[in-house]
Length: 277
Image 1 (tube, rainbow, N blue to C red):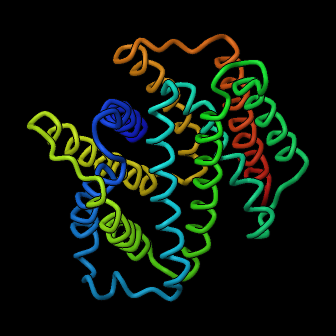
Image 2 (tube, rainbow, N blue to C red):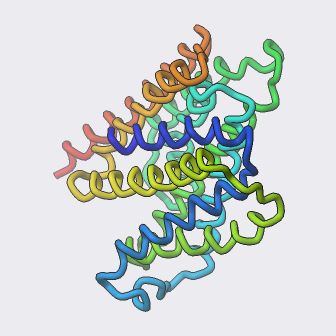
């Protein structure tokens, strides 16, 4: 829950910053700090061992997808309220279910597919194509959720050959190098408050990732997953406090369906796991 609060706070500050600073610049600062964080984590193994990957092309692709996904979500914040953005993005666990079944051969029974269908219905209630203005910005979090799902599936794939430290090192280094090419193109010198907020988002991002890593040290991924939906609560509160945004009834209903679909999938999987000898 602390990790989700951190991600929500980072997104709220990013929504504030994107009005004044280029996204490339924000990403470069974020990943520069993340590189320092990653080095602190992997140094116990030695940097040489940490960066040695058996699947470097897949690691690089995965890290670039994460960078593009981050850019898309920050861009979405410039058009949409935080709660609306994350209501659509909450479909990512269901997207992972579909992609895992298609590309990793993971088990996906009728219950999972029904949950995915229900989640899609929830997104339609949020987007309501043809019945609201500014339809196109809602495609941004939808594309972001798809990329986040692809990122998670690729992370599962590389975990079969590389250690978590290697994956962490590649995540930070590749994104930092890639963002270094775009940051200078539209650099705007921050004032004191700007530097404080930019560094705050980078530090919060690193701490939130660390909190999530620690959570996964103490519990299985399936046990941690339901707490990810508390992100919707945090962004709704922060969006109201900082920007006065209040999601409408259809958005709340759609988000509830998406969350319940994900929780049903998690509960169903736990029942199957418990019943397996």
